[in-house]
Image 1 (cartoon, helix red, strand yellow):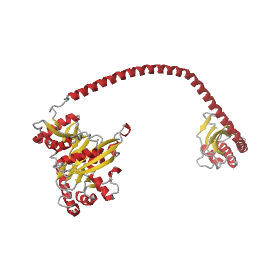
Image 2 (cartoon, one colour; image 1 turned 135 degrees about the horizontal axis):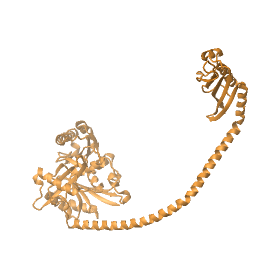
Image 3 (tube, one colour; image 1 turned 180 degrees about the horizontal axis):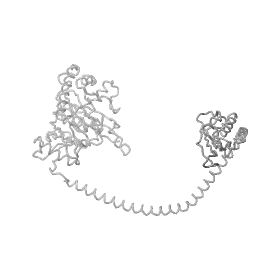
Length: 545
């Protein structure tokens, strides 16, 4: 179980949050999502005159956990700027940001000792190979003097930041970086207040106010209406300034701090600023609450610890304002001896990995070739078996089809025999059935009958066919045809030019579903045929199974 410590150092109080997080590969990164649990919280009085006493008490409370502490310091003369820089690596971004910052403020150059206390917050990548970068700096001597009592007490800091940077981590916990809206953070404490506006992990605006809800008297005597109006006025002024300078539209407001019952500020702030207001007074980690305390006290405690908890729960804070020697102003790779040793070790490790990988690839290639040869022999041996299996499958399918046909004939044979009897009874002697096809349909057999009717005239041939249809319709097995019959009439028509030559007459199709033929003479008159005629037909019936 790994422990991390976050400290918020206000002008009047030192808040310490000790969190425990599950370590290991399976839980890596979970702490940033709220799985870090608060193991202990402490609040120690602090002032510039009693810094040594406070540092000693912090060391006593932390015990052996004296390293890797993350610290947010209030009251520093900090500078927060935003630049649009080329998309470079972290080291080059620091150099580029320093150059841009010095062009606007010469006081940010290194002092006589050559030390700087600054950091870069890289934001989202934009268009044309640029990205938004935040640059924060504080006077190194001022910060060093403030840290000295804690360093003398044996505490080691992994990261030292301003409250605005800590608030940027709060926004990151709430939204993440990708597509995060511009969000304002309002920290309301007893004797200090901070306004921070963050977008994409970059601090766009930071302001610390030397007053709070109990600056002029006891917290119980505060006029909440007047105080909320004052807060809303300062917040509105800050948002308008940022909007005019950078065309940024703020949409959300997160409120934290040690003010009792922060929720009373929600309605006034929302009404005046027209932002979506959210109070950070819920305990993300259950251990943050105080056992036996009322819900209101637990909410106040959770909101007061929010900044220190955000620092402690962050698994990797990549920046720190601790004073260090300024790097060369030139871009490119400039390494100290430790960096050179790390680079040489990295190159040696890479070469070793390449050699091991090459040997492994050669061994795997030899094994793969042997495996491929073995598989080729197996495929050759199995090809004949596959052919025999396919032939057997085809024979089995043919046998099943035949058996299915026999089963169908066995079950439906008597019914089809009745159909044949009905056809025999309905067919006149002059009508000859040339073929009959029975195919299965849904719940029925579709019977297609092809035949011929011979008579002296086309009308007579059609009369015979009509008699055949009436006889079939009278049978309970056949009934009316399901489709319009198809007929073709051929007649031998003698004339002066060529007697006895057969002449094809256009096929006659009865359009209606009832095949009642009228006067034969009318048909004959229509075609004016006097020789022998042959009518071929095809008609479809449906026999229920």
